[in-house]
Structures are given as C-alpha cells and as structure tokens.
Length: 318
Ligand code: DP6
Image (cartoon, rainbow, N blue to C red):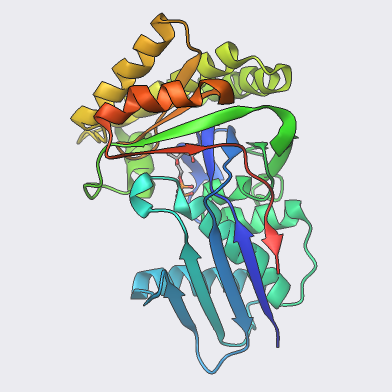
C-alpha cells in the first residue's frame, strides 16, 4: 500500500461553468475556460491502505458530509479499494472565494490515483476530478485551460484541454475579498435553481460556446481587451441567471458593487482591467502584470484584503 501527495493550484473561470446536463457525473451544460493561479495551493496526501476511512481537512476531522464526498470519490478510482486516510489543507483563506473545490478534487484525483498505483495521464485525471467537482477538471494544467463540455453520456469527452501554458502571458489576477459573510446558498443548488427557474438560463446556455471561442482566441492572441470584454459578459450573464431565479440568488454585497465601479473607473482612465465573480461576493480582476499595483490600490478601499496572483503551473506529485 502506498502514499502519495499532490500539490495543486486552484483555477478561476474566465468564461464560466454554470449548469449541468448530468448532475451525478458533473457533465456541464456549457464549455468554460479558466486561468490556473500561482501562489495558493491545496496539498493532499492519500494513504491507500489504512485501518479505516479517515479524512482531515485543514487540521480538523472532516464532517460526515465532507467525508462522504471524499470517500465516494476514491471509490471511483477503485470500487474495491482498501480503507484510506486522507489529509488535505489549503494554504489560502476559504473566504477568498477561490474555488477551493477546483484544486481540492484535482489534488484528490492526482494523489488518490498515484497512491492506488494507477498511472493516469492528465486527461484521465481531469475526467476523474470532474466527477468530484466540475471546476476541478481544469486544475490539471497550468496556465489557460478549456473544459470541453463533450457529448458522450459517459462523460469521457468532457475533459480539460490546455490552451496556453503558465508563461504564455504576463497577466495578473487581483482578488478583492469584500466580505467573509457565509453564503446563503452554495453553488451546486444555485446552479440547479438557475436551470429550473431562470428565464435567462436558455440564453446563457446558447451563448456560452461562442464566448469560449472568442476567449480562447483572445488568450492565444494575448488580446486583453477582447478577453476582458467576453469574460465580464460571461460573469454578468451567469449572475443574471441567478438574480432571476425564484427565489432570487444574490451574492453581491455593497463592497462588490463598489469594486465593480472601481474597475469601470480604471478602464475609463485607460487601464485594461476586467472583472469576474463566482458564486460569492468577491471580485477578481484580470489585468496586465504591469498594472496590478494600480488595480490593487483602486480596490483596496472597498475590500478587507486584496491578493495579487498570477498564472500558476500544473499539479506536482511527491
Ligand atoms: C461559479 O465546480 O464548484 O465557480 O461541479 O457542482 O462541484 P460542482 O460545481 P463547482 O462550480 C463552479 C462554478 C463557478 C464557475 C466556474 O468555476 O466555472
């Protein structure tokens, strides 16, 4: 029986994943495109063979719900597996809203498969990670990554594909943490509610593939204005499907709006800075690395903390 440790970076979607065509397999209703971040990591160790299934998250025992999700995921690697011990920790604040499930399930896939003695390539690991959390399918590579939605019912073609490596483009992602208030609703039920009740959901689904096409080309061309425009619109369309749910899902806080206006003011003053938001109140701003300090300064009055991140690399196994 073996141990393996994986260190994996979270990713932020530039063109968003929101909505599923198959819940249990996390098959998306839309393609998406992300940037893997540097600096922050999830580090996960799996001992394949223990006296009982045991999991520790950030130094505390996993809750029953967390344990269920972790061990059902390891069952995907081998349904006849032995009991396993899992230790996982994030070195970034959960309140930063940095999609910890993206690095979490990618790290569990990489460490779990290695501990089980399975030699899976990045694509196979992406298919596996996706089943833990959709966004995790994109954290198997550094830099810019597309998640192809695929067509197959078994999901084998719903997989991440690298678009451009970590060193392709010197951009920054500035993250303004505006509130650490607990979310009223998690992203998974909110996605479902959007699909079931928002009159805008169909438009969201119909326009997503074209957004990814524009974004992919803009990444390849290093065209920040084009990428930024389509990225912001993807965020606003996604949030439009939430605010028009019954009942509405509203993640923005007053600080969120202040940051949005600060980004628009930066642009009016000539800085190419573009925002995205996930299922939470924090605002993430993409800009040229050379402009990151200016963007940080503009967001600081409206945020509790401002992090500056850049493109990150692929998972590391040790
Ligand atoms: C808003 O990947 O956390 O961050 O597949 O249900 O686990 P599940 O959802 P998850 O959703 C992420 C949604 C998002 C957008 C994105 O990352 O593309």
